[in-house]
Image (cartoon, rainbow, N blue to C red):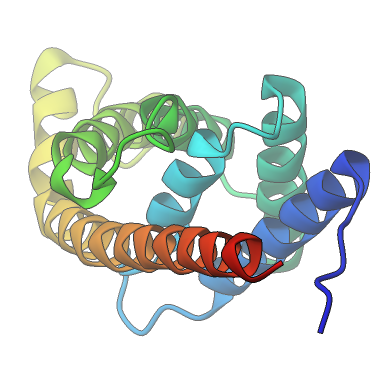
Length: 183
């Protein structure tokens, strides 16, 4: 059976739609507050070498804005978007690593960036905390339980996604080597 070869532009669209759908699912299917595969999927999106930065941002932006349109826009949602951009950035260059699953500093850095930016937005754009240094510290302190969930889910899903990605690449390379040796 001969494998179907897709053009580069078709392959890009397949990647963009597939990751976009996973991102949308991740926004709605989280069993606990801030426990989601959204961040880890953004790291994967950031690592895909076939997609340019504008295509990655398009997928990310459409998924986030579309899901927020359903969930409802809230004070500080722009800061959440800026926080999520950190996941795209840390994914860069990860695809070429043989075992990216060992690069746990990537989801750690992204989780910290998201925590800082999203909670700064809560402090800045809501009336929940006074606009003082103490109010900002209170805001970050109240967010620590959510950070634990974000960090743990980012690590668990990052390891899972990157392990599946690595195994898929190895399977594809073995299949390619087997087919070239037979024909």
